Length: 557
Image (cartoon, rainbow, N blue to C red):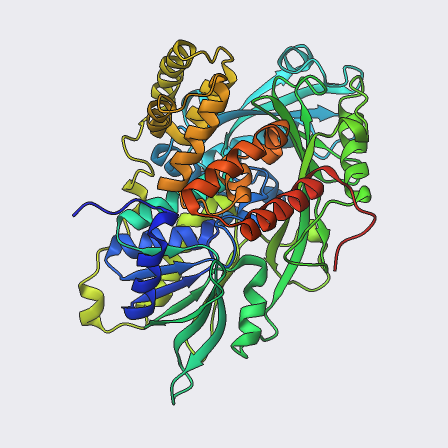
């Protein structure tokens, strides 16, 4: 039987399913960790449900540095296992979605009094390649000063000694999360955004038997029953453990990471760079489409979990760092086009600075049966899911477990008609560029954008373009993109479209104001919004645009 589309238009049916059936597993949290668990569980044969109080990937999973990387700096902290696992996972996830997880050459400049000397960089990158099973052209090379400046002329010629040149992978974290959820849905998982877990309900043994939830679309409450419950709620993990009265001395340590975005004209970087900062940290500068972004910060966080913002101190730190490394560009506050600020839900360790805290994940199992996972990295979502499933399997009898398949997510491609290599992705992008030119879109940016966001699913968007009569072909394209997102990616709000599904708020922010009215009109038609809903949607988007373009004096509380 063909799975129904992953669409908000099926919400009534999905709500009926979750409120009338009993599940094997309910996952609370729709970030990349929860999405990975949902795919692993559903593909093994468990009756699976996932709920998210906001939109999918609206928290940490949309606020990363957008790299699937091994974590070179973790070698310095001797986290060998983490580097090995992350490095090997990069290659697996690239094969599952080569359009979305894209090889990215990284330059690590060697400067006087830098974090790494030439010898340590060479050895470190060689160990990194070994642990990550890196082969062929992806292996590290050491470049001299002239070769380094040829790769990236904006670097400081007076202080550069040379560089390490190695391989990472770039991604879109929110798109990765969405594709995982779409695939989990294909395997039968029931998945809902804008549904919040409100209360745990216990049996006489004080074990969780169900959860009371709120549908934020209607305001109505409903109950979901399940044999197992997993909290993959990132920064909110401790909040749920408090509701379960199971929070103990093992708890989260939240740190904030900020990234700032410049138009490519203001920061014409041609090569991704991982560079030193005066305080001993290292940060990335990465060209992406029509923009270049820089990050990240790493500071303790005690503010509002639901509205994390960028402060003036954050941007001054990043501006100082980037202007020091690239002294001829003279970037200023007014050059920043957009920004994002997110939280890392790390495991607390006494007397450690934020950047020293381990990125390892950890699982907590409460007496009530609540399984919580915290910590971890974007790159490790698949292995984290397997570890959570191991905890779930411990609650089952041998007979129940014998009916389930072993985990095989390393073989499950993430899109239909999936591409199999970077070479095929480049070929498709060229073909798509010709098709776009035929319908009046000359800018080759859009071929890159559609390919890297949707893969061959972009064909459906191109086909839908033909049904719109707008004079401007780019208007046709964005309307077709919205149509696709509502029918196949569970778009439920303006923010879902402009942020999580398309990344426009961060990497093409001018298009938000340009097309907001048009997109609102189409959403109203597709989703039957009334005047009150339209007002609410515009107000919410306005706040998000403000946060992406404004720098606050202090954290919000």
